[in-house]
Length: 167
Image 1 (spheres, rainbow, N blue to C red):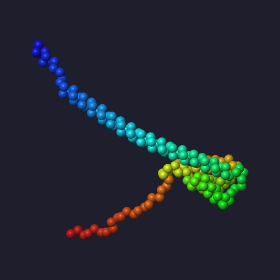
Image 2 (cartoon, rainbow, N blue to C red):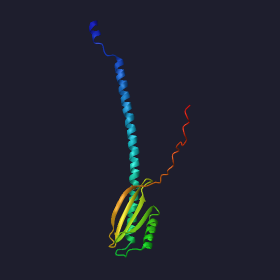
Image 3 (tube, rainbow, N blue to C red):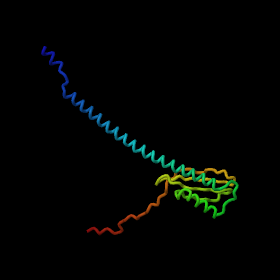
Image 4 (cartoon, helix red, strand yellow):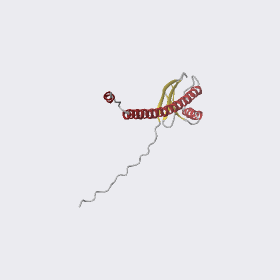
């Protein structure tokens, strides 16, 4: 009987403990990685929500300016002279509280009005509207473009000397 007991010995408590510790360690690592991934997703989602909100604010402002422009120039009105164009540019800037830069140019049988509305510090909404003499306007451009920022060029300090003669 003692022989049978010796043959059926168990694996012992040591191997089970090692497997349990390794299992807990793996689960802990996976939970930390999941938490880090969830936090990164939250930050990205918040940034995306801010960008979308800024875009729709700028889009709404651009539509308001577009409505103002088309109501400003009546249907079948004669082509404006340079002073009237400058007045229209000024009124667009005043209407948008100075947030938009506008230019009005001659486009054959009508006017081409182009203006920009800032979305954020890096992007702007560029809008181009053709207003023919018939008064029915056509949107030619409505796109997001990067704001060109002036980059100050500073010269690199390069050593202009000569090597000392080797002795």
